[in-house]
Length: 95
Image (cartoon, rainbow, N blue to C red; front, side, top):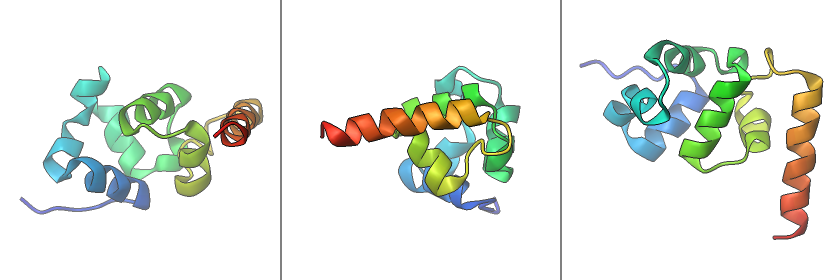
C-alpha cells in the first residue's frame, strides 16, 4: 500500500498513531471517515466538531492545532478562535 501524507497535520496524526491507525481513527472518534480524510487533505477546512474530536484523541488543545497546523482556520469563526486562544492562555498561566 502506498503511504501518502497529505499535510503537516496528517503527518502529526501518523507520527502519533501510525499510518494504518490514522486511516481508521474515525472509528475511535465516532465519526464517519469522510470528514477525517478531508481534515488530513485540507486541515484549514475542518469543521469545529471535528477539530474538537481531534483535540480529544490527540490530547492537544484546540488552539495548538489552530495555531500550529491551521486546523479549521477557514471554517471556524473568529469568536471560536478567540475562545480557544483565551482558554489556552489560562491553561498556560496555571501550568
